[in-house]
Length: 63
Ligand SMILES: [Zn+2]
Image 1 (cartoon, rainbow, N blue to C red):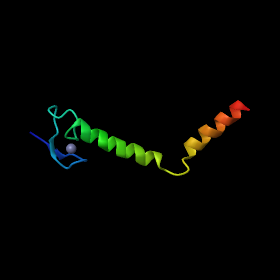
Image 2 (tube, helix red, strand yellow; image 1 turned 180 degrees about the vertical axis):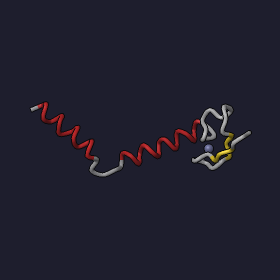
Image 3 (cartoon, rainbow, N blue to C red; image 1 turned 135 degrees about the horizontal axis):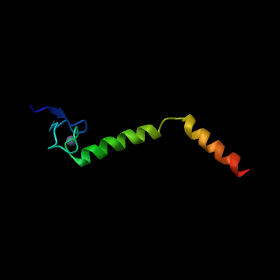
Image 4 (cartoon, rainbow, N blue to C red; image 1 turned 30 degrees about the horizontal axis):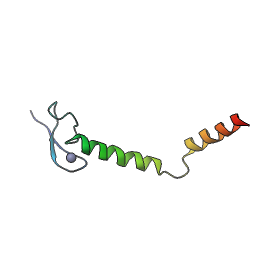
């Protein structure tokens, strides 16, 4: 049985098996593009509370 999925980046059909080490992506490049897009989205969230906490804690330790 062969399962074919679409590469999330370029929409090319990808065989979902050990023949495609970057599945569901068709290639390493498409995987990196998708991970990069996800990471930059994550960083652009305004007022990330986790980041603020780390920053103020750091300032407290210095004083
Ligand atoms: Zn692709």
